[in-house]
Image 1 (cartoon, helix red, strand yellow):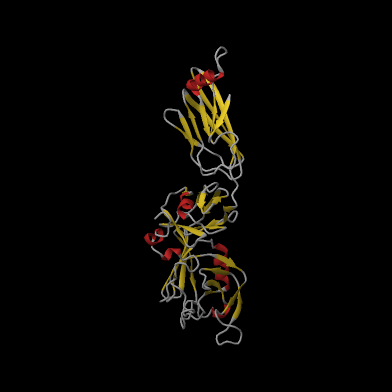
Image 2 (cartoon, rainbow, N blue to C red):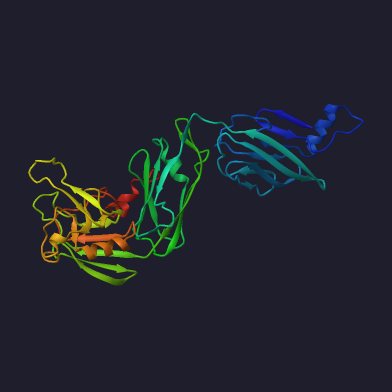
Length: 382
């Protein structure tokens, strides 16, 4: 017999005796081992962040399973096997069936409860995770950047669902750089040649203000070779290494330094992407203004959001390695620019020195310009 009441579904595990009244029979059966499942059978609009609980009055629980089209729900059995409780949130607008097996006096009995979770008006989803390009290998400085479809009210609750699991462990921390974006940076560079897994158990999470997480996220990231570029702007050369071995010393011509915008930034840059060709336009100027230019160049590799690239520039080859004459980019010979373009990985490190303009931490991916202790302070869990 199944009795529903309140939030629980109670299954009487032993049949009532033939000779007594039904009330006495039910009471006797409950004493011998009733199982209670919460939420109860037939319950609708269950909050997905509430737990599923199973309890047995007498005897012990042997097994509890939760079936549904949403996330896989697991739980933990109490040490005395008298109760079981789910350990994660549920999917939205989903039907779940809980099946519990209990044993008492040598007999195994089964109880079930089927319920549905609510479907809220507002949900929180991940719009994109960077990096996420199929088959892409990234550099050892690469951050993990997560952007949401709406402002996050309860950042701490959302951040608690995140897990970053590298094959070669390294300390790291999240930092919120707005209401809808959070970035993970390691304390030191990733070890090369490994896979990093990022997961977020967002499905059913109460993210605040009546918003619930729509679905989980599971993203694998491949760290490639350790490619490090070190350059001195004042000496007009950079050296590229891969896994500690020198690949090439490349002459360049950097920003001429006549203005701040024409000064190449010093600091730890990350290679952000590549474009071929790329159109360079003078910032803040329009055609006819003094200093206006619009130039199309080949094999551009972006290193900041303030217009800094490495790129080919045949007209400055004569001074590459000896003078800085550019508008802020690193001019390379066509051959060297193509070579660098071909080997680059997003997240590769370019460490430049020799100018009086420091790269700002949020100019592109300049996150390594901030101390790790300072970076951690941006976590909602700090």
